[in-house]
Length: 181
Ligand SMILES: [Zn+2]
Image 1 (cartoon, rainbow, N blue to C red):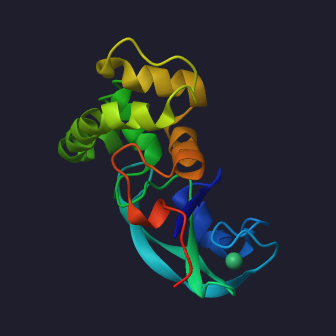
Image 2: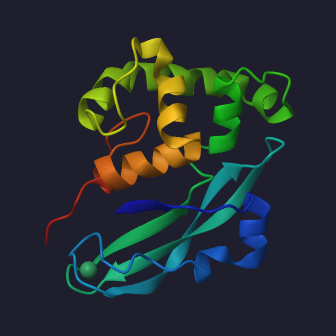
């Protein structure tokens, strides 16, 4: 299972400080619902872009649920699930900041992200229901609507994963509540 936690660091600060080791997992295990059941279980590496659009590798912490014997990984909120480009760069793109170097470097991929977000928009609004307040007048206003409700793209993604088990782009198995195997 994958969760997203609020992280104010840049990707470089996150790597340099070993933040994946000092972030605490949730007190209530999202898998079994027990208190303090998660044990550190190593990490895996993934790529994410930084503020200037360069790809760097970051470690992502994994915790093991002692009851279900399944793992939960905690992605820092600057990263998007299964997407290389960091949340802030996608937000800058959606805000029309095309002169920003990170946006320029990844413009083609960011257009794909936007198309995917638009394609998933109706489903997203159906799942969220009134959870973020009254819906947008049309799907093209999806980003201003999410920004108004959540403040930033990273915050919107974290709320979508934590409260609604979806991302801006899709419903992934790894965000669904697990059952014992
Ligand atoms: Zn557990």
